[in-house]
Length: 501
Picture 1 (cartoon, rainbow, N blue to C red):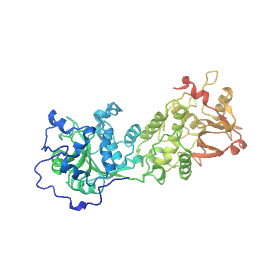
Picture 2: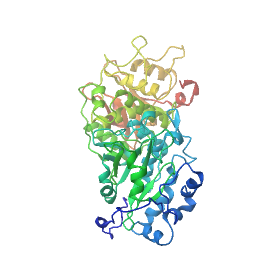
Picture 3: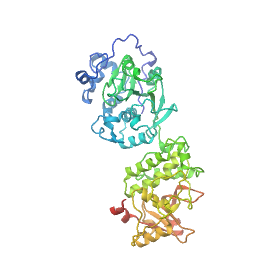
Picture 4: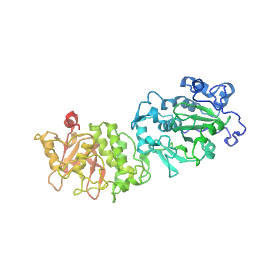
């Protein structure tokens, strides 16, 4: 639930800030103005830990005023949001492209804090960081860059978490806070709230209707609490660029469900879930989305350029991230590779990847897969190259015959390998990560990867044919048997660590 300021108060009558003489922070009854953050004694006074949270809210009359207008549940969130600070020992060592959350993670911590304050939901830190990086919001140069969100005015922040950001100016701070939104702020290195020589992100969380003070959530703990507008002007707003870049109003959509959005280019960020652990309802949704998407008539570079991925390289990183999260060199990693490619592309672009046997992305000399991801903008696969592509991208070597020769990405070769290794089984014995293969003749050969199972058959990921492209399909046991399919049981292969590349 989005806890807004108590509606019992008339927010249009918030008292004026004009004439305020000193900036103050209501941790106690002291008044600072403006303090010297480089003075250890002053810093210790205001840098209170969670146990002293009541001091942050103030004492006596200030405490009563600061409680009014805030839901008690929200007060608990203010206490616990420190779990997501960049200097939390549990987070500070998390790597960020050669840096860590502790030394460069203020924007991610700010966004995590915003999400937690809106929802009260615990955050999967790894997934959250992955979403931010995938949306190109965090790289080394962007931390402390006031233009990181750039144009357009509205930018998808971490869409899988229901957050979105709109550029505002300083005159719109009060109205945005009064409408229940959080404000993400980027200050330059001259601000007392920033680290030496670095820019910094922080959050303006809410406005108190009685006192007119604004609550700062600061991911590095400097100045967290209620402050006056004069304090903000002196320590924050005076350290933005002239055009107010560095201020974004961050909204939360409580009804956000990535899986329920209509399939449309420019609207989708691919959903972020563990592709290796999907319930049947979710797999059914993948099936429905896939079957409602048309086959692309253009290249991946063009399709992805119209989405939040923007480039093929970013989509490749998305596939790698999902494989790593599921387990590189595991059955789960292979499933994640196949679904990231097919369903991820469905969701991101609203289209299906194209199929081609003559142009399939294999090594022309070896007829095998030796590259991860979408390796060029004219990317094509067919059914057999997709099967071995998923195997390779999931972290495994090309399967070898007893002679030492590789099983190439052709169904005839793949079924021969399965027969030699004793892996060919009846279709009913499969599970996600196994393959279903048919090879009565070269003309009717086909191979698909199982991604889910119910009582009647399987959900499969496959490159079907030129008319259908890459899709999620359903196949019943009855249909599979009548069409001459067998199962390639991959247990022995996946469990042999020598096969991990």
